[in-house]
Amino acid sequence: MLWYWKHVGSRRIIEFVLLTVFAVFFAGPLLNLLVLAFSERWNYPNALPQQWGMKWWDFVLAKDDIVSSISLSFLIATLVTLLSIVICIPAAYAFARLQFPLKRMFLFSFLLTHAFPKMGLYVSIAVLFYQIGLMNTLLGVVLIHMINVLMFMTWIPTSAFRSIHRAQEESARDVGASPFKVFRSITLPMAMPGITVASIFTFLNSLDEAQGTFLVGIPDFKTMPIVMYSIISDFPSSAGAVFSIILTLPTIILLVAAQRLVSADVLASGFQVK
Amino acid sequence: MQLSVRKLSKRYKTGDGVSGINIDIEKGELVTLLGPSGCGKTTVLRSIGGFLEPDSGDILIEGKSVIQLPPEKRPTSMVFQSYNLWSHMSVYDNLAFGLKIRKKPKAEIRAAVDDVLKLVRLSGFEKKYPAELSGGQQQRVALARSLLLNPAVLLLDEPFSALDAKLRHEMREELREIQMKTGLTMVFVTHDQEEALSLSDRIIVMNHGHIEQIAEPHKIYDEPASLYVASFIGKMNFLEGVAEEEGIRIGGLRLPNERKERGPVTAAVRPEDVQIDSMAAGEDRKDKEDRLTGRIKQVMILGHYAEVTVELNGFGIIRAFQSKEAVQQLHAGQEVGVSMTKWTVFPNNQTN
Image 1 (spheres, rainbow over the protein chains, first blue to last red):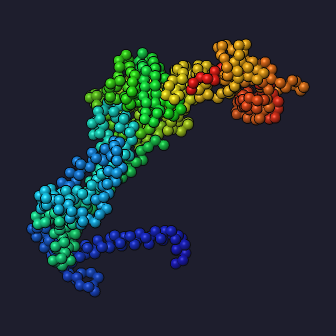
Image 2 (image 1 turned 90 degrees about the vertical axis):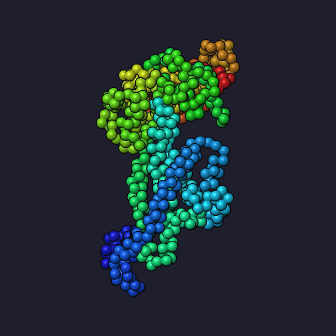
Image 3 (image 1 turned 180 degrees about the vertical axis):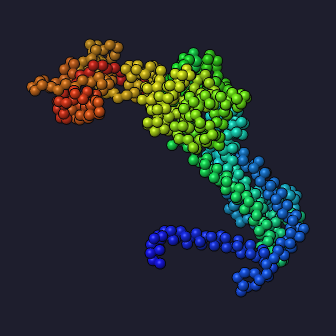
């Protein structure tokens, strides 16, 4: 056995052990969730369910408020993503390109939304929403979701815009493109990987948001996470598992899509005169 | 006149800038703006390209003022030091971008791109992306993109300075060749005097925001207009002296006072114009009217020539380029006589 250890080398072994720990740590709960979702009876001492089946899938998908919560969540996530693109991308461009007083302060201030306990922030926003009648409205829910993503939606595209060199924009002007054409054909496409990653993050963050929605959106705006809370507390854990998988699915699809863009980003960063 | 810059001034908040810049460039000329960093050469170039708004002055291209026009409306094209290309576009799209904006038919664009790629010797690279090209190839594509638009004036902002020495040399020759073929008017900015001397029809030497001299390369080298130009271009020895009615005195050495200078002066002498003579035993070791004396510090053989460093008696150090044969009898510590075949005299109070 010893010759084997020597041959492989301690470094390799440590890497292997670490990888295994990580794999178990990340994949373990997911695997458990998957098994749980397809089990109908699973008692403690058994390693696997005594009875497999789709019962809880039928149950979850048959519930009306679950199906409507899925479409509501996607609607809200789409709205949040679009709105924050419209607001944050021009802001990010300004942060990256323009000089104005207290610029660093402004950029840093986005961190404030993450500096306080979320619930405290939401409660004070809820008080404000009461006064202007935004409680239990779609706009109110969308706004509270946007507060969460403001920081990333501005910071990531800002650094994406910053990584575009002046000379690249100027040479486009030079060959005859108007400032608007330069932004549309050069700046925006080159910043696209960063913007897309930020948008995907925003979308997923909104799908997952529960605290703020619970405070502002109840009773009419029950999104997936909110419905899930009630399912987890009211039904066996298999129902929660099924619902978790439904919630995870869009995340996985978007992350796979994002991976391709990240490799495009790597390609872009390899572009430099040596 | 293809390009005229008239009384151009621009001052930055830092205090740097340029003032009173006047330049005239003929059609088909390659003119270099040469100077150290911060001398204002890039400011002049960017003003011509429209990327910088000067405080005052005018810029005329083919007789028409362009000072009010944004860069996209000017008949100029610029090659930047680096990051010229758009990394999300293929070489073909990079090149075609300007022509597409001009709404040229597709077949015409295709043909023009093919032609220009042949000119910069990158045929077959259409589908490559900038990240797949070497630094030299990227700069050639950038050059090609500017050539495609057939600009009235082509501006080059230290385009080869990010490349290694050998490649820089090749690119220089290639640019010169392309310039001959196309007959384009070019303004080239560099801080590399060798690049300027080898490439240009004329050189504009700049310092601290003003022009020191505009002349052909050989003239800049042989007849520098100021002490600054003399010290910036090539290697130069400086000897402090006093100008009097009957001549310029540098210790015992006397030079003719052709320009009727008065007071303290500096004589600039190229190392190749310095003559070193070994002295016979018992010869008078004093300065004479036609020579200074000193002791050799070092003899360095540098291939086909040698550099001899002499510590002059009371006048610091002078360097001389000698042929290999001439230095065979010379060695460190030897007492020698130093004479000069050619020099330029500058008054010391010249404001620089």
